[in-house]
Image (cartoon, rainbow, N blue to C red; front, top):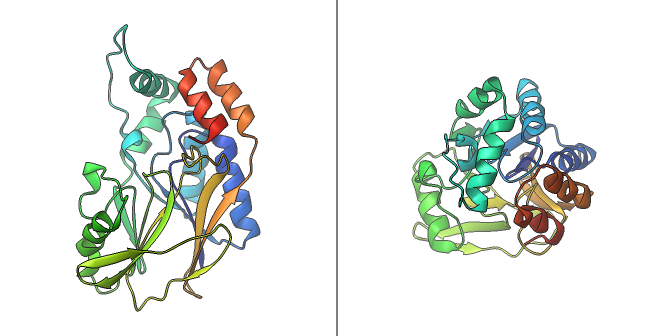
Length: 250
């Protein structure tokens, strides 16, 4: 099975569709969405509906911090984050909000543990930025002998670590479109990047494919028309910072 892994879509429908189309071209026959379906971007309702359809077709979907959609009292001097969160909530129907709230924080699929942030404390939304945090996340599931892969997002960048001892993990260099052997004799942790809001200076969408039969993981970058999304963001009245992020990849 080839499982396509997308995270941090952030209400960017063209990026989501571009990743889905590319994954199908690569032979993906399963999909996992690893949280933050909404937030920041101009297409929250459309993204939720696309993901609901994917779930009905068998996709695995977990909840991210932006998917909680709390009630917000937006003060006159509110910052861009609060303004964007309040706008997002207003765009969604009650049914769409309820669906997001009912998504699980984690899912287990065969040897794969799916989570938005970290396996040790998924509700705390910690970032996996270095080996120590990666190891703490891996330790939380290592007692389950069947789990070999912890896969998430949240950090908006692609990374891969593997465990060399019960107290140490090391980072693995990655390149787009180059498969990496991830043998199940080891423990692996990956962040698959952001489909809808990359922050590494590259405007292309991010996602990954885990070939569970060949035990290979491939990180992908996908071109899409990000300028249209920036225009949609401005037209929606969202903070200018969010349009600039889409245009620059930062």
